[in-house]
Length: 305
Length: 260
Ligand SMILES: Cc1cc2nc3c(=O)[nH]c(=O)nc-3n(C[C@H](O)[C@H](O)[C@H](O)COP(=O)(O)OP(=O)(O)OC[C@H]3O[C@@H](n4cnc5c(N)ncnc54)[C@H](O)[C@@H]3O)c2cc1C
Ligand SMILES: Cc1cc2nc3c(=O)[nH]c(=O)nc-3n(C[C@H](O)[C@H](O)[C@H](O)COP(=O)(O)O)c2cc1C
Ligand code: FES
Image (cartoon, rainbow over all chains, first blue to last red; front, top):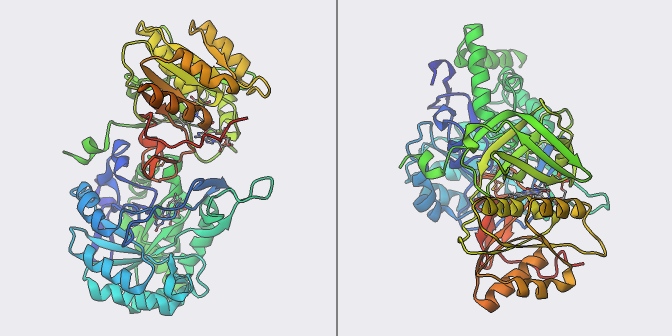
């Protein structure tokens, strides 16, 4: 792996600024490409208890992207630590576990349990319903975001990355709330709530609605990165419609320090490896490092403010 | 064990050249310049294929790998919707995105078996029938077709199967139980609509026969990662791409589904 590609997300050095978006990546991708090239290893979101997830159909193609309602099937945190996590050991890049929960207390308890496991950081999936606030997404609200991040911060010294939603009314306030409560980085964003109907007007997903991802999400998230990077000092990871080199460069220019790739990996499992190749070739041709590109973007973003 | 060894055999993700694209009605047969990774592919295994033309669907489509008598592989598929329509429009020399080989192979015994299928599942079951015939086995091949509402591919597929020397037995849904009972062998390999699969399971139970089920479900990753391809099992759910060939008794089928 070329040192040219390394970037920092808080205290962690990532071997490259390209990492998987949770839920679209797994160990099986080692059958396709060398996982040590990734910026981080991010398994599917785990929840405190076991969950079945939604019935089928769980995914449809729509508007040039995907709408999914998988429903976060999970073996639960305890079984995940015992049975799944050991298989992810020793791959090289930092191992970041994505965690989702329905209350502040269950987020904190699961964080404490995971903190004792051999992992390098936690991604708090805050774009999930908060049962203590009538099912509103945690990250839709600055106060709920602050509460959950503070509770998790109190449970671990591990790096905490917070994954936000594109539908927050005041994204900069949510970002500042996460920062104030001890987050180390922000991932912008999870999917956008969406609906797909068949020709007879019936929902195409069993869950009726789902989350839109892929190309149609990119301009929305790019704008959020552009806004949020002026509101916080935290490193940002752009996540939404990254597929080609141009997408990654756009996110870096808007102020992101890394990008996470989801839908593109489902369309082609080697998508992240191809993107890393393209980025490396681009950096080499320009005589630059990823750190320099990312710093340039951050400087421009600061200047915008 | 390394993560790679634990995860399974290598999977190619390449753009490959179309050597031949033969389309007749709603059936298409594609022969590609298969990369080396596909050399040992067996019946039951599949590839994900995607047209690279502008406007083609985002996700690749799962299609079974069918041996070509005399050597090589093909995919044989029904034009079901946009994804397969784009694939069927490919011309020799065009490049397609190819991911695979994926999935597991059938594990049927050498003795004559009963193969059961219908149009939407024919690729997978034709692969098994041809592979076994090339190995010198003679099996019964039951093809379920509804004379009142035939699948657009039925006539072409039945003619092709007969031309390949597989002597298909066409069974109407109403005659299915009787036909299956008459052709019952020691082992059943079935890939068909739910009501056919439920009948195959019933036959296996009643006659204490072993067998395998070939499953289909819309897929995304094909690698067991995204959890899109769920199918009901007797206990809980299974991921079709972690098969797609399962012991016949494992999946749960809705005996009323797909029945005319
Ligand atoms: C392991 C596996 C092997 C397969 N092998 C063959 C084969 O050899 N030959 C062949 O003709 N077909 C095969 N199929 C089915 C084939 O993948 C689908 O017909 C195809 O994906 C439909 O895509 P489309 O865009 O043309 O149609 P769409 O518009 O996506 O779908 C048309 C209809 O087919 C259903 N469908 C969509 N995807 C699948 C799917 N993956 N499996 C079953 N139904 C689906 C949809 O719900 C819809 O009702 C296989 C499926 C699997 C899972
Ligand atoms: C099939 C699928 C499953 C997903 N599962 C999760 C998940 O478990 N946890 C999570 O935080 N995000 C999940 N996501 C969202 C992605 O991680 C990502 O935030 C989103 O898809 C936007 O990125 P993209 O446009 O590159 O796909 C999922 C997305 C898809 C398409
Ligand atoms: S298609 Fe992704 S898990 Fe089966």
